[in-house]
Length: 333
Image 1 (tube, helix red, strand yellow):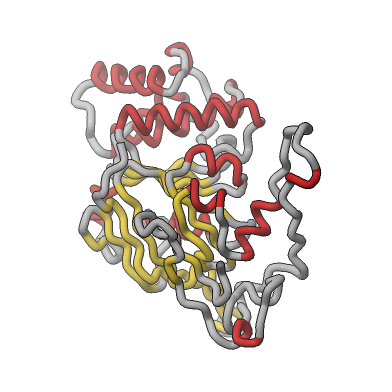
Image 2: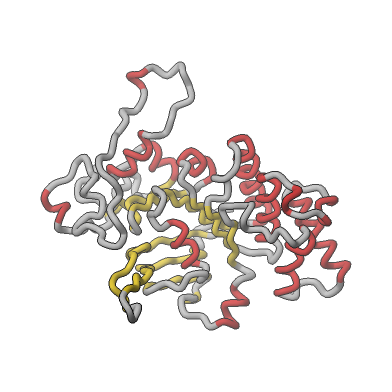
């Protein structure tokens, strides 16, 4: 269950990828993938992270796990600054922090059986003393993720996409982690299978006390699974609030535009009751040369002069005084 204990804190995290050119491959610029992001994740909750493709969601998740080295900032896990951990200490940390990748077809080794895939993290961290213990643990993982025990000797190509993602989830759970980055884990699956995987992840969270950073671009999926939601745009967090508040009363114009694009499947809802569609003009600016001031101002429907020169400061617009509703906008209401 969710507690008030902060499991993970991210402070002013920045990630830039250098662009090199010329005869001597000198750095001639950089891609600003993540630009000074800060947030906390409490133990037992699910923080949903949404935004357009290329806004830096996956890069942020990989930086938190130190799969990518951040350019600057702090990552604090269980009170320990892990931003500059050496290889040995980082290896031990891997047991507590895991990732589920987006593509279940590419993230499994086609030459390894399920037993080898699930046994590899057990071997690396030396979690099983005997072969019997190892096999017992693998069958437990298969049962936990809704897979038949006969799957233990089969190869990834023999499974459907949903079954492969269950194997990926089982692999992440093998080392008994506390925190899992879910990098668009259902975006490559059919809608009916998506619901099964989401329900499985929620059941596992309750049973094992897991904490998720759930990265996705499907706003309905995020609403269903998340405790709080952060909306990301061009490497920055535009809005962060509880799922209930964000979907009921979005404050940032970018969030409002995203929510207005969600299709409403109920044909009985009258046209006048439907939310007015907000069409954003232009394209997302290049992360190589982001605009001055507010990053969103070239596409914002309520842009004013100071938006073009002054970057907005995140402010709490919560009305109940309990649940923080952070918005980075000069004119959010």
